[in-house]
Image (cartoon, rainbow, N blue to C red; front, side, top):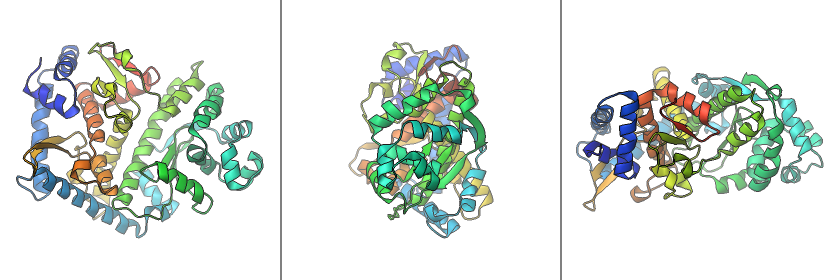
Length: 417
């Protein structure tokens, strides 16, 4: 039933209030839980009051609050730089192990190295070969790191070739082509991949990438030291480790299926379901693997009930920072504990009410990309809020299992999970 609280959250999500009320009614009916949204609303307001106080403010204007948030991010970034005593992409493998060690999942189910070499030989990446000056894959792999070559596929080769030609070779993969091994964090060799690095960074907002099927996170060296770059890399490393771990569970869960290879391809491509799959049924939720807002803020699927694996990985990364606060002096992230789904309206200098969110990644990116108040990000917050609504009714373990069980289909029925 539509009320003030449902209208509050529907406006934060930019969703039709009547449709949102139907989603909440369905959740209440299926779980037989009462006043879930109302308690969530009250708890959020209490948290926001504490956050404002922790930032040294009382009744801030929206712009003033945004500036205070950015200053807090900058101070944390400086603390991380001080921890490593150098740019994070110049850290040793031992120092990067600090990031890996705070993650619960440190191993996974990944493509075997000999299989990865065979796939490269069967479908040679011509642009990578040309970039490095090799005449064959065999000669290239004699001198170059296998994992770095695979990383280069993502930003040297043409995306259409990668998706339609190279990844097609994955369709024949079976469980015998995978093995259990540790997740890795690697820093690309700057001299080897200088041109590739420039090409990649011209298209991306951040110097990182990862390989789900190989279980590797890559940090791409850059000459430009943006503010908040170190905290961003620290957060994204944890994010990618959580993402790799989730997809590893998905690979393991489906490895005995006849169409296992096709499921691997679908997962790597991050295929997004059609809005038609919701069928206008408040019991049917979508699983959206990407941040659709970046491509089209008006994408109709953003207004449908859904969960987002990407926001789940950021949740894991934020929790890791709480662990760091306990073991490393000077790194105090407590202010950001359980804030990714928080936002509220504050009066702006123009006399309007403006929504300011406390999503860690939205605000880190705002600092790193030097966004002013009018340009601030909010799409991470909205996806986190959708996930949190699901968690409030079913729990985080059910969220993870639902993603693993239904990722390929792209949707699920809340009455059957």
